[in-house]
Length: 233
Image (cartoon, rainbow, N blue to C red; front, side):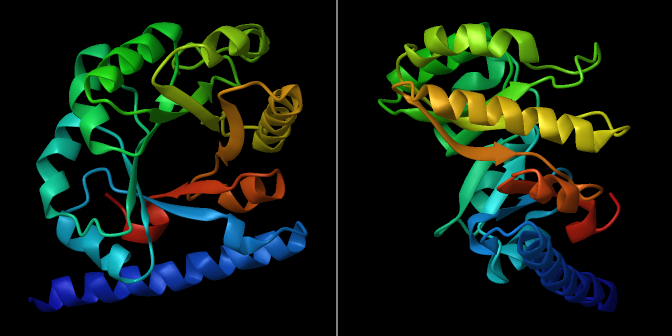
């Protein structure tokens, strides 16, 4: 191992400790149990060697952005007791490969994608856990269900076979992020209160390196950390 590699591994370990302490403090401030909040390591462009350092130091949830990168890195990961979620925009022609490798697809942004996941999950004889991605800022450059349509479509979504809705995910605009987190929490609670079969609001995935502390204040229990954990790409 080179000195540079050693220093990078050391920095990752230090960052994990800092992030976990920040999560703990944010949870305490919000009167929440910090153990219910999952730290996701966002692994885009990160070598499996360094991802495994994070795993060896207590990070047991990985977030993958690209199907091809996931396929290339999957066999190199230390996967015992580790969950892998797909968090990037997923094209329907990549679903077949992704369904075989992940525990959850967080970035479900359309009925068409859900139905494709259902089809390939059935072929694998599995139920795929999914989070519904909400385009909370209704930005043209982002994917996801509009806030106004998700409550209308949730009953139909609940009946799609071989998928299990486990919560919501969002990537809000950076400006006025607090307001968008608050809106996401309201939608999350509304769906929870409906008590729909095959829809469990177990997870609210929001918050990144820049705003995960604020996301925890508004109920996030999966925070997706890349740059803060692994350094600049």
